[in-house]
Amino acid sequence: MPMLPRPTVFIETYGCQMNVSDSELMLGKLAAAGYDAVDAPDGADVILLNTCAIRDHAEQRVIGRLGELKRHMKPDSVMGVTGCMAQRLGPRLLESAKHVSLVIGPDGYRSLPSLLDGARQGQRVSATTFDLEEHYEDFTPRRFDKVKAWIPVQRGCDYKCTYCIVPTTRGSERSRKLSDVVRETAQVVSEGMTEVVLLGQTVNSYFDGTHDFADLLRAVGTVPGIRRLRYTSPHPNDFSDRVIAAMAETPTVCEHVHLPMQSGSTRTLKRMRRRYTREGFMECVARLRAAIPSIVLTTDIIVGFPGETDEDFEETLSACREIGFMDAFTFKFSAREGTPATRMPESETVSDAVSGERLQRLVDTVRARTRDMNLGLLGTRHEILIEKPARRGDLLQGRTRDFRTILVGGDTSLIGTYMTVEITGTTGHTFTGAPVAARAALPMAG
Image (cartoon, helix red, strand yellow):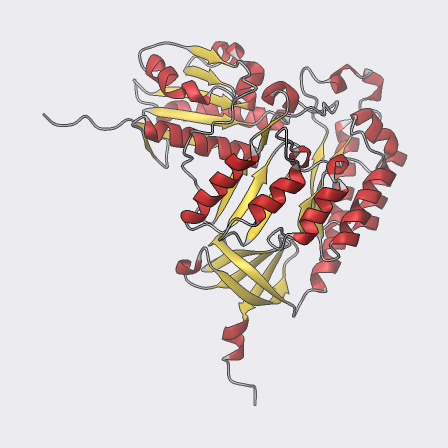
């Protein structure tokens, strides 16, 4: 008797690295349950959108995409929405999109195969209960990236910034056991990966009941075979002396920190409930640079937060100039239903036109400083890890330890390997480089 074909699943991921990691967990769980992953939605038995809710624009993209994907469905296909937007909207998604059968929050993936079985028989279900013990330890992720591994060490957040939906969509903060993170790190090394990125909403507040983030950095950073250790995203308040010392003393920890500032104005930071002042953030930067002089910083910044004045915004610009971020992810404030910021007086709303103008000025300020720093790197040499083919021609994309992107010529067989390159040019955010050995082999001019 011929075997029935295995059902197929297509997952499309939106949002942060935590969502990418969750998609890897879901694919691993479904593979173990008899599903085959496919790279396109056309005719897939199951189509899942793993979603972000951090900004309204992200949700609108998903809503539009749900409509687009409907035309790829077979009569018996199942459409599901997972992740933060699913957690936030719950049954409302089932009501607004009749072709959606499943809505599953970030803590519901253990039940995914059984829920899909029900959906394929016509059931429509919303599963958005928090499980504060869930870390999916027995899941085997199906990793998208074969060069570096995303490893969640913490889920949820207790900070409750006034603009942020994460505590609503991912629940309270809880950390994995250090031994489990070390075990997973050893596993990815055995699969050929040498770079690990530890993930958490405020990752450096990690505490498993016994070990803090400093312990975690030292333990993961000394797993045999690991060459690079990164993490994202930390909170400025949780850089204890122990954590900074662990960063400085663990050779595998990379010289880059993505340090969300959000605003350079103490007044705005207080209204955001960030729990630090402008001066406190500057002190954090100074402590990091004193311990690791070569460290490179990137950041997140919001403009147009309710009540932000011209003076507040100018303080953000001056902070960027003073600190010299290598790059900044910049956003206009997006009100999220259920967050305290939506209850601020309407008179404090910053118009879209003003927010747009401030955003452009902020981008110009950051880029001007970045351009000056990048020009100073021409001719310097760096070790890069080749990550993937670049979008430009036949080039490859690699990253330095301090997170700069360098494009270099070479065959795709080099992906996953390390190479020393000399920077030959820059186009703004990206550099071009040439392998040092290859340049040395060229005949001398004249």
